[in-house]
Structures are given as structure tokens and as C-alpha cells.
Image (cartoon, rainbow, N blue to C red; front, top):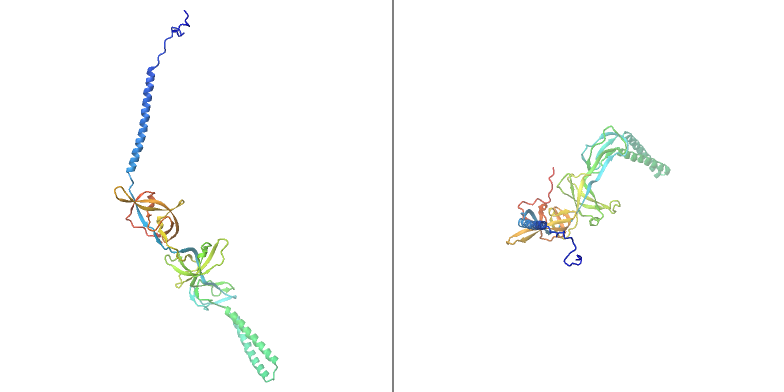
Length: 397
């Protein structure tokens, strides 16, 4: 019999037995896979359930409304003011000096006194000049007698006209000597050039005074100048006669008022500023030259603008903003207040109020105090605490 041609024979040796599948191992794979699938599904379901419960918890747990102070934006006319810094200067101020050299023989003033124009202050030694004056006066008397005699003789045609001319020349020389000597004597007596207040005495009796040495300062305090500068941009708003309000550190809270009297016709090329001078009456003489002054020029009024308290505006690098208050009706019919951050365009800030050029309208309500704890959409309530005074000025000690 041929084994290769027998149809039911596979050609394998009769000693090989068929291979059995590992049923137990397959069963373990199925069990482990099922457990892993159940575990993964449980984790997914747990995360979904936890997120849903957290969202439901925060949705039902709303923070309490924040207590804030609310102010109403209103349309009003804001004073149009231009503020600058400057200093005060005297209209008349001089260091009194002598025109000539000499030794001081008498001091005729007291330091700090008020004097009138022409009041004698210091007398220098003028003995030689007084002697020269007496000499010239004597020569003048003799020349006058000679001149009168020469004129009489000339009128009778007894004396020549040349004698009259010579006598007239001698008389004129003596008169000139008198005038010159009197001028020198007047220089030896130093007088006050105008009404004012004397300062500290800087000389002593017996001191040899050279021409130009300061004797005492003299200042007229009845009228002062306020000198200040403004930018080239603001110079077009200034006119002579406009009112200027002056504030000085020595008298806080006390205003002084003057008027612009001079506007420099040239603008400084280095700073692009223009110098302005105002005149201030100082009847009490409490303002002093050299004081630092804050000047405010009162310009013509602008049209009404919307304003809010300055504390309501949040100034940041990203822009200026306010919290706009709006009413919201709840499902139970009650009304609540919420805030929305609204960006605005601000203008000048005057006396604790800020101009709002864009972003608000008349009648809008904004948060004036308490913005630090707010964000857009927060619920608020109106605080019963009084609003801080505006402007809030720190106390002075």
C-alpha cells in the first residue's frame, strides 16, 4: 500500500498527538479585561459626576453682595482752570548803596522800619565838601557885587562891556562850584528812593563805606508780581486782565487774587514755555518776595460735562474705568444691584470730581467707594456708611 496516495492519511507519523488550546489562560484574559473596562468606566463616570456636583454646588452657593457707596453721574459746568507754579517778586525792591566813598558818621534808620521816599538813612562825613561849599558861596557873593558894579558902569557908558562879561563868567563859575559841591554833599546823605520796608542793617557807624556797598535792603510790599510759566499749548488761552488765584504754603487755605498784567511775547526755545506775570495787591503785607506760589488762571467756562467723584475712577495702564451699577430682577420678583466694569475717557480733575468725556451719561450710577473687592457682574448693596468728604485732603500739622 502506498502511504502517500492514501486519502485519509496526513503524512505525519502515527506517534504525533493533536495540540490542545489553553482554555484556562483565555478565561483569565477575559476576566482581567472585563475588570479593567469596569474600572475605566467607573473613573470616567466618577469624574463626570464630581464635576457636575461641583458646578451645581457653586451655582447654588452665591457670594453675599458687597457693600459699596454709590454716586450719581451728573452734568455740570466745571470751572475752566489753568494751574502752574511760580514765585513772587517785588514790584520795587533794591539794595540801598552809596554813590561815593566816605566814613559813616550817623545811621538814621532802624532795621525793619517802614520809611517814606526821601527819608535819610545814612550820613557820610562831608566836612571838606561843606568847606568847599562855603568857599564857593563867598566867591559867588563877591562875583555878584562885581557883576552888579560892572553892569551899572556899562549902563552909564563909563565901563566897557568886556568887564561885564568877565564879571558874569566869574559869577557863573562860582555858581557852578556851588551846584557841584551841593550835589556831592547830597550824595553823602543816603536817602530811601521809595516807600517800603527796610531789611537788616549791614553797616556800622565809623565804617568806611565804598561806593556800591550794600547798606540795607528796601522792599515795597504793597504790590507784588507773581511770575509763572505755561506751556506753548496753553499760551493761546491767556489774555491780559484774566484773574489769577494764588496759593502759598505759608498761608494754607487762604486765597490771594490778582490779574495778568504781562505776557512775554516770546516763547523760550529751550523749554517751549512762555513767561506770564500777574500783579497782586498785598495790603496786609503778608506775602513776601521769593515765596513759592501755585497759580491758577481762571479761563472762560466750558460747556457742561458729565462728572463723577474722583474716587469712582480706577486709573490703570489698560485705561480708566468705573463700575456702572444696574438693577437686575430676580426670579422671585426682587430687585438686586449688579456692577459692570465700564471703560471711560476722563478729562480734568477739579475739586475732587473727574470729567467723563466718553462712557457715561447724566444720571448713571457708579461705585464711588469699595471697588477693590468687585469684578464685573458682582452683586452689591448700598452701604449705610457716609461717603468720605471730597476732596479728601490730609490734615496739616
